[in-house]
Image 1 (cartoon, rainbow, N blue to C red):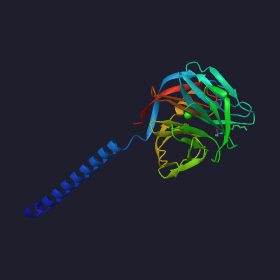
Image 2 (image 1 turned 90 degrees about the vertical axis):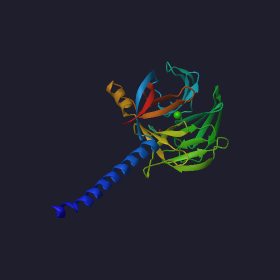
Image 3 (image 1 turned 180 degrees about the vertical axis):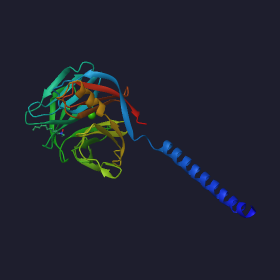
Image 4 (image 1 turned 60 degrees about the horizontal axis):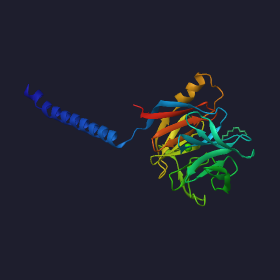
Length: 274
Ligand code: DDQ
Ligand code: CA
């Protein structure tokens, strides 16, 4: 009896300690994870939906204040930069571009709109109140896809995994950051928006928006929006193209998204996927 019992006591103690150690370590890890790591994936609720010109091949979208949006549209002979009313989707002011240009990313800095074009390395600036006051510029990105600004630099994409930082005065590239998620480069970065210190990018041909740290290019999290495009397809809008176009109203924290040839523009609210 004694011989059998004595060795089992230390064994039991060691097992108990091991169990406790494992439990405490696991607790620590889960607490550390839930405190320090932000959510990796976001889903959404639709707060509002607004009409959107189904002929607009949306390539750039930015909130312009006073319930208006500025939008850049693509396709040859159909490209434009326009100001539209949020509530009705009605085009208030439109500038038709020369038919040889294919409009791409758009951003608003001060009184000026900056727009890039596909495959020409040419961009335009417009006076936000008078689109006929325009200037042409050339840039050093491989191509012109998306634009956004934090008010100090202009961020640009060219369809690669590079997030460019441009000087708004000279339009010269001042920094290149490679965008990565878990050590994988994220190519096809397209339309951009600057939201609360992060750069958000539509990834071309996907229903996802990458939330990027512009300092090191890390993808902090993903917004999953496949249900928006699926919903439109299900309701018979079969001619739509990809999700493209993010606009942020920083005064009221409203987030708007749309797509190329989408008949609707959505105001959405994000929530972490649990
Ligand atoms: N981009 O928006 C991804 C930068 C370019 C999209 C190009 C779509 C091509 C549509 C048809 C082009 C006709 C020449
Ligand atoms: Ca945008």
